[in-house]
Amino acid sequence: MMTVQSPATPTEWAAYYQLRYEVLRQPWQQPPGSEIADDDAASTTTHALLLAPDGQALGVGRLHPSGAGQGQLRFMAVAPAAQGQGVGRRILAFLETAARRQRLRELVLHAREEAVPFYERLGYTVVAPSHLLFGVIPHFLMRKQLPDE
Ligand SMILES: CC(C)(COP(=O)(O)OP(=O)(O)OC[C@H]1O[C@@H](n2cnc3c(N)ncnc32)[C@H](O)[C@@H]1OP(=O)(O)O)[C@@H](O)C(=O)NCCC(=O)NCCS
Image 1 (tube, helix red, strand yellow):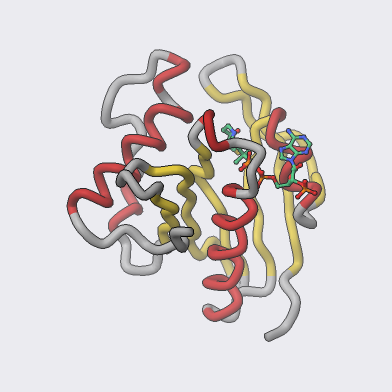
Image 2: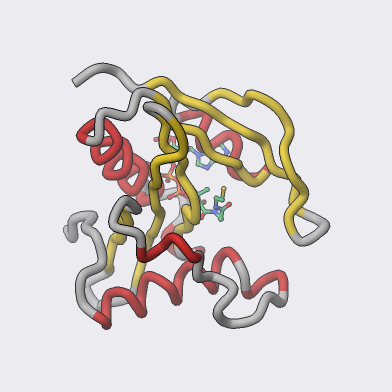
């Protein structure tokens, strides 16, 4: 079984961005490159990647500091064929561990409506409806307090 890691080599970064694009951008006809965020390269941003043995990405996600004691999760995506098998749970666990090591006390995220039950299962609660992505995907602001180390 592969372990969740941060992408390190150019091949791993390519697999990471490929999955982001395929799951979160391509289905809505967004152009290549739209999967890249300006602060991806910031030293304070933590990236999570789970690779299959063939080098394809099974799951990705990222964390960045978003305020005093607070972090934000973004770009969580699991390959369609690998969904429902615990990959998302493992990506989230990796990022939550990273957040606790950074002494963050709270995590927030904007969940796609479809993903809300996944985050609820993992201890997040809906705070309020947020934005509409690409004019069609309702999002909900969600939050989780992190336990002390
Ligand atoms: C949402 C997503 C990241 C979840 O990852 P996943 O690997 O499919 O989820 P897991 O298998 O790790 O599920 C973890 C738990 O959440 C539950 N869960 C996952 N999706 C669920 C859903 N839609 N409804 C209810 N429960 C769900 C699982 O049953 C599991 O609970 P269990 O361990 O008690 O059985 C993934 O399905 C995905 O990439 N979806 C498309 C893109 C997307 O919406 N990304 C999030 C953007 S905010």
